[in-house]
Image: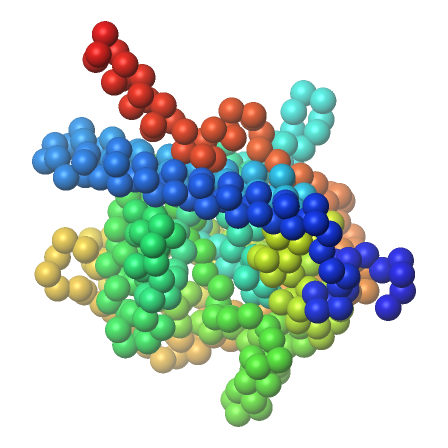
Length: 421
């Protein structure tokens, strides 16, 4: 290993020991991040839960607005922790040739610039299912950071993800995720199907009837690329007589297919946003967790110089083969208030078509990773638009207070002071 090799390109177990200053920064990160999480979850319990209990429509509206604020606070907190402890930037490119390609006019429309011509964010459609390849546990962290910059409507307040059911009652974090209305699954399709149906029905209804954004994140591979999962993917490919991937895992189509079929009837303009994510420093056929973990990012301060994200977008109704939905209407989508969950079985031939379509998308994604290892970029060769560079920094200083959910205790203290005269 050359002495000039940057730390992020050296496996974690071969890096030099941390300095005392770095140990102090790790301790500071732990204190600040955990304090912010306690503030967010405490605000949910102390200031918002009473509004949820009250039997008034106005109190329910205030409760849900408050929950959106706390979810946005957590999204801002993730950006702030990157800004203070693991500085990096997003390098965003757009597909212009293959599946899910953007036109140049669309790209120009979606990029937001300030008066000096500097890119400050994006203005993408606000109702979408987001999928991506899965290399490191920090993938979801950086994807949530991306939503902070994706639209002036604050999509980071409307993020929904699926989690293991065992995390539901983890103190602070699990409780907060329940308030966020995240979807907890047992990882058994037989039992998860109805839970997913109920939760997606709620999300779809709120997004369309109330005009709210929606970002539902899924990782179709289901797990990280590792020395344990790579052989399993290869074995499955051989069993099914299909081509395995080189740099990523074969995707599992069932959860995504069912989610799109459940949401699409309720949200006519639903989009599927696909990210190919690549991290500098990880060698070809290497494993991301050997180079980037949440601990190495924020305790050791070794962040990638940039996170490369390549975007593709599909109109779900016309651009994704989710199957025949003629007999499915928004009213037929599972209603969480109904005692009976109405489900429509997906015909096997429609499953096969969607599975083949998703594998083709993943094959293009794998080829994109090949190109990244050769050129250091995910952008198509003939693209006219350079990569959009967005530093992971909060846009306004006052959002530091939002990241610590300062609004609710400050408001309560102000009102208490006014009441006491």
